[in-house]
Length: 239
Image (cartoon, rainbow, N blue to C red; front, side, top):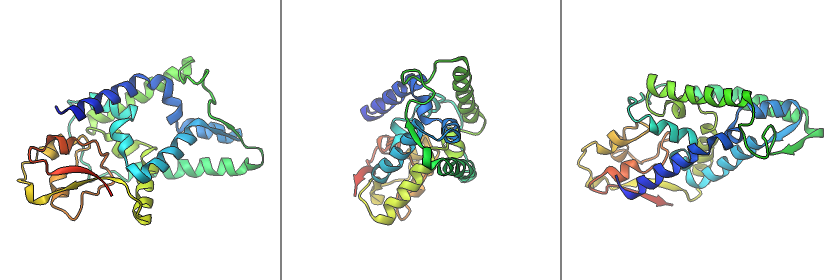
């Protein structure tokens, strides 16, 4: 394993270890509860920040920093996910959820208040019996999807955060902003398929290399494909 991947996996593990502290800052439930009371909660700030960051880094967060991503990569024996089907499911979850949050906040617009630490104890997420139930219930869901549907299935099918970054990436392309990407030298490729076999998102990377571009909304820019390629066909670029 190359040094870059060791660093990436170490960062993911650290992110997961701190998940009991940070889970409420990624919560889809708190914005609903806060919206009912006219409160803009911490997770909404997180989602907005990830949207802005994705304008320049795509889904790099998913591949390098996401606590749930770290948990899923620990499920190393899980089978590949059939990514050509079901990626739309996360938008089926996201659209009614973000619509409900928006309606609740607009309804309370005259009395809105900001509380990034809402329902946390001095900024720490897990501090009550019910918060532990939510935490372990979420972990169970992520692991269950990994071993029944496939690797990183939660990212493909159920994550409510991913649409923010996919939309950010689409805005980046529309505005032609410089962004971190993967690029490939097709002439060097001998179609050994190591890149495809090592992709944690189960993408057909060889097909991407020989296609018009390496662009894929499900790519998390983890660099596994680049680091597993003996011909150094794939590289990071910022353009």
